[in-house]
Amino acid sequence: MKTISVIGLGNRGTEYMGFIKGFHSKKAKIVALCDIRQQALDDIAPIYKISEEMQFNSTKDFFSKGVISDALIITTQDASHFEITKAAIETGYKYILLEKPVSGVKDEYRLLRDMAEANGVILIICHVLRYSNYYSKIKEIIESGQIGDIVSINHTENVGYFHFAHSFVRGNWRDEFTSTPSILAKCCHDIDLISWFIDSPCVSVSSVGDVKYFRKENAPEGAAERCLGGCRAKNNCPYDAEAFYITDPFYKAKFIKHMKRTLTGKAKNSKQDIVDALKYGDYGKCVFLNDNNVCDHQLVTMKFENGAVAVLNLNGFSQKMFRECHIVGTKGELIGYGTKLKMNIFGGKSGTVWTGSPAISGHVEGDIRLISGFIKILCGERNDLKNVTTIDATVISHDIAVAAEISRKKGGEKVLLESI
Image (cartoon, rainbow, N blue to C red; front, side, top):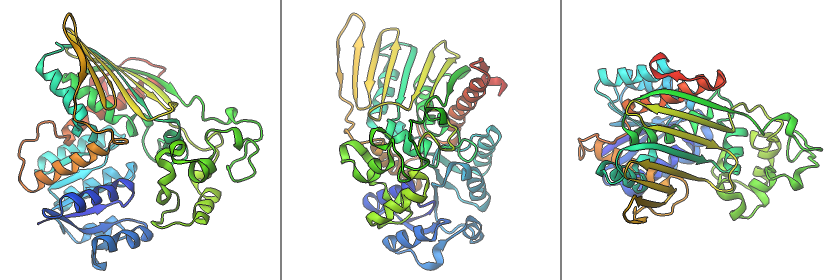
């Protein structure tokens, strides 16, 4: 039985813990928890029967105990990933699963790569989309040669207007200085996929984008700093927090209506808890009168050494959350919409490709398969790391994202990857 510790008990960390307990309880178990919030420990520790001495409020206390488990999962906020992972490697952990992104600072994520290699650490980053049947099938078709050599990829990440407002205007990823830019926080998944599909070094990047809509000057007449603070525009505002989290039916509010723990920090909540969170917390603030600074739209153009080109579109203004991808090859094309994939062979057959990917919301399927793969590696059941998103693969996608931000801040100027 392998043992696992978890640092960071937010949505992602607790989701992964649930997968381990639900699907892999005969192979691995959670033995230690670390979170700066005592409420999170109080809520989660009893579920996994974690003793008090294996609960920690600080990473300093956690690492002072040395290596206390076979593996470590780190799912804290973006800005803390580097320091915690560095401490984990220095402490002696050999199997680490780290939530993406690693860091928005080139020297930091490259240092972790070098440290992992020097210390024999398997450091896997949670680029979960690679692990889904859908994207694995796309990679399989590309490698088979059926559509020839890739000429171009046009890929769009439609975040969903409600998701963008929740996470990138009101939420933890609204500030690039305390988190990371949205192109890295949200789209390092997509850049990783593009790099994986093309399988050639990226040589140059150019990018444009900005905060176009979620700005003070776009606030409607009568807007207040809080949706529950006397706002006279709330009845006609699609971003009204009261509607998002309290009154909208599920089909309108989508998943965020059920993220009550994100709003309050507590596992069990009354309606008054939610109302108070909106009155006094970040998620009740007006999206136009907030302190957000990450792009709500951005285009990234990439050129690769083999001649292929790719365009990534970060779109914060879609009705639904979905990714669309058009991969053009010399012999055919692939057109995908999240879980549906069509292949056209020039002068040949066209049709829908069965990917075996269920229509699960978001990237849950990829999350499940990521954890399954991590457990297999931890248990010695898999030694081949091909297509595993180790830190080596992450450096590639993070370099592109960093170059994109350099270019964007220079008005779209072309940036050579070798120069960053």
